Structure formats: structure tokens, C-alpha cells
Image (tube, rainbow, N blue to C red):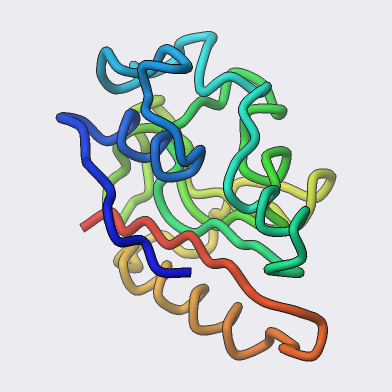
Length: 160
């Protein structure tokens, strides 16, 4: 799939939502700006995201999210592995320190989720630059993908 046109918004959350829904953000109420920390809302869970659509139409068999999420984390249903992604390695909030991985949420915000039921905070990578961590994960996902099972979608949202 080649995206020929994507118009970015003035902030990251609305742009991220537009990319992952393939819809203009005024259609689902995310046109006003970024999500603030610890708010009880995010991208409506009724919105179907790109990885789920690609799987539904047989274009991919696996989808992985890496890096910045920032589309809501007030409940697990708002997080990537409940939105069509098979795994997630990254941070939920709008900002995270590159080395300590402490987020705008006030605590450690580097997470790994492999499926909807296996998830946790990553604590053993303190001191490692996040761009390197995200690149390592992307390389690992691509190198371990079995193309005979179908296509692969990797959403890689660097912090830098």
C-alpha cells in the first residue's frame, strides 16, 4: 500500500488518528488537539483502525505497533493490542524521556504487550535511547515475520 496523500494536523494525536482511521479527524471528534495526560478519553473504540481493516481484507496477517501511541489509554480497550495490533512496544502518553522512559503520565511509560492478555511495563531498558529500542523492535518484528502466513503491517512512530 502506498499512501500518496496524508494531510497532517497541527498536533500529533489528530494526525495519528487520521492515519490509523483513514478518516478526517473532525468525523470522530479529535480535531481540537492532543490528548492531555490522564484524561478519561481517547480515539473512540468504535473506530476501526487500519491494522484491523488490513487483516479483514486479507492484506496482512500480522500488525505491530512500535513507538508513540498517544490515542488514549484510560482503559485497556483503547490501547493498541485491543485495536487490531498483535503487539505493542512503546509508550502510551504524549511524551517520554528518551533514556529513563518516564512519561508525561508521571511514571515509567515504556510498555510491551504481546496480544491482549500479556502486557507490562518494561523496566530493564533504562538508560537505552528510545530510538534505538524502537529500531531494534522493528528489525526483530520484520526479521521474524513468516511471509508465507501473509503480509505484515508495522506502525513505527519514532519519538525523535
